[in-house]
Image 1 (cartoon, one colour):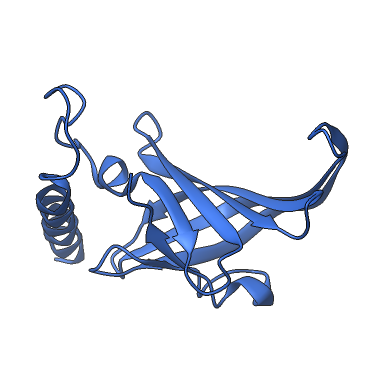
Image 2: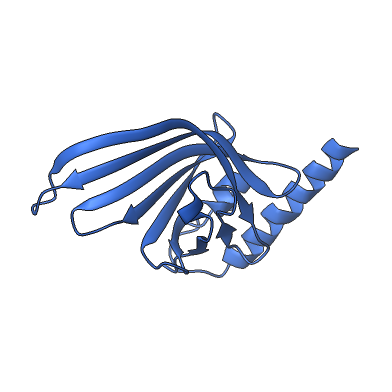
Length: 155
């Protein structure tokens, strides 16, 4: 029963995302082909509306049936924290991950990487996916990130 509810919920979310994006932009039909999975439907660029310093890129990984999430937080002009994880949606409408890698990247004035420090691997957590398309990182391992609310970026 739980599996059927999950499949119905996934189909409803996918349909809602398709409907929401159906009228966006212009271009060929190929550019606007309907997503084949929930992960394609939620893919794209997001900005954190709370800090306005963090961004996220979600990319569907259809072979692994998940979404790759890359989060970037600008600490300064030369320092960026980057989180990379692979998430799957669960029955609670959460994007759950257990392979998060957090890195601190320092660049010089020209944008060249000076150092890259991996701060942890195998981080666990989740994003809550809201009906309005927002991703709330309430399940972040790092306490400072739990207030992040990522909203889709208009193209």
